[in-house]
Length: 430
Image (cartoon, rainbow, N blue to C red; front, side, top):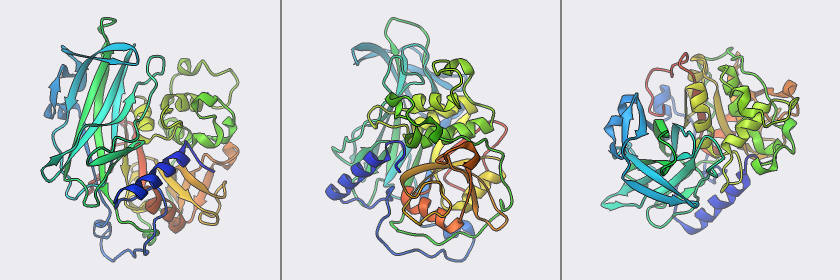
């Protein structure tokens, strides 16, 4: 089984491997020795997995540079745009915000951006990134063209652009040199149809997860932590009840693991989209908010609903906050569960590698980590079950970490509301 167009993502990664000298963590099993977890506190054990999440929101947005936008009420809005752009036959007024140059404490090899935006009428946003390595500065690479609706813009990623220091693989910016990049800068362009309205798109949050991960095929199982015996009451939805739904948005069923997982977390916060937003779905349809999530996350270039930041961008205005990051082990996922925050995890596994799964294998799958047993095994809502009744599953801790950490690099969606602050304590990845 594949999920959300993941097969095409794998093929593109293989092409990159064959043509460039990359040393990055990919969403594939990579050859290499197993790495035992050394003794010591969790941050020391995780030192080899270098991850840094940086976010600008509210007053922090004032730290960036602006052209034709202003920060008002903690959001970026068009102010007096002096630039226009022609896109898909329409002329747009354009304003831009650029982040400060940001340097993690390592040579980053991958970056995934996140954002929260609102795009009324015929407006949209474009997110770009560029990097530095030594004295070289890359060109701006497009990570996504995004709008909350699909009436005026076909939401899309822009794979390729490997003309200098980095390449784009769907939602992930990948350094072309094994040494990685020293620093990065994000740019967000706010677009509004010229002369049509004074309503402005707005951006409340811009962030990026930079990482440099070891190339390993397996990891040692982390020790159970503080969430043992705790399971969050996350509603259960099945992607499989949507088999054949709306082929223009991926066709439901096995393609909809990501929007189904995102919807389960939104349901947990009582933050599902309002009913009028999915009145295009026939009455009596099971879980129509999942169809709405699929429509709202569909990436026309990727031809799937599994674009990671498109899912968090959809969830952020509904729940309040959402971003993409990587976690270093289930120990960190436990900290989120203790804080009352379920985590959406990107996994892949072969036959016999994840006992009790509703599918025998997957090249890419999204599940929701909702808790842990008394012995530390992971409790998930797995949307690949045929019905809601089978969605709740318990997976062996070690098997799950090996389906997650070496394969997607521990990638996770963090979606939360104001009532659930992020876990405190030492961390760099949220």
